[in-house]
Length: 322
Image 1 (tube, rainbow, N blue to C red):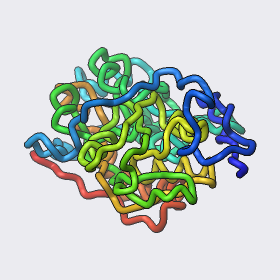
Image 2: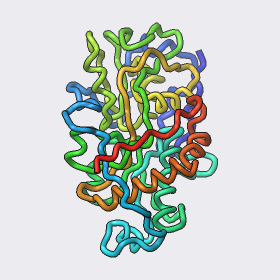
Image 3: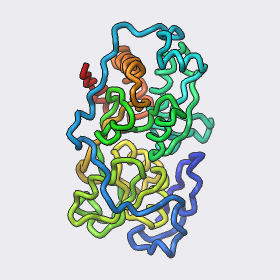
């Protein structure tokens, strides 16, 4: 069975199992195929699932009236400090096709999250290119905000009660269902088919949580990036991948031997993360997101990057608490 090569992401260099004849992943002893992926480790306890913890995970601060003009931010505000620095520093992904990936033809970072980050830079500076895009792992998102090494995170980042203790969030800009990707013909058709199987997720995400609710529970392997899950599946280290549907669709686009199967086992609601206590910045970002909802920008970037997922359901409505 021929397995297509991965799309040549700059950070996804482990292509040793990208092609050639091989049995299905579930039949290959991992030790006989390749050494473990760097950073891969079993996940033995469940992270907090989205929507649990007793808080309103989507509550956020409403914009305050008219947005300030680009380049003319209120004195002393977090936005003024960003403008004074000359660029917006944003933590993004470069390994998730459709949301944040490095185009191998141009070397440029592209995707839904990337374009959304550029819209924030546009409203800060009047120029979407006054931005410094920093590739970060899912596990590093919160530490980088706490250390203020980035101004914000736009990286398929869902607000949870646990995360809200450490960072603040904008309104939700995208909703996704969590599902499963498996090789065609593997016999895995949903969560019930994962009993006794090995399932890959990205560390630092909430994707492992729904897997711990399955009975019997599968073995869960955590890796650094979602493309590492694809390599692990091609190598035979795991039998399936579980993550948000658009992330899985991006992996399927890179290896047509895979398919997304089963019903939703969880959900994701992506928001922009900012350092804790940045109320002015939260309100400003929410103003940008409101503008993208109203002027058609959200729909435009959906059509450009996510149209393969099907017709747009429109941007999520914000949940303003005050």
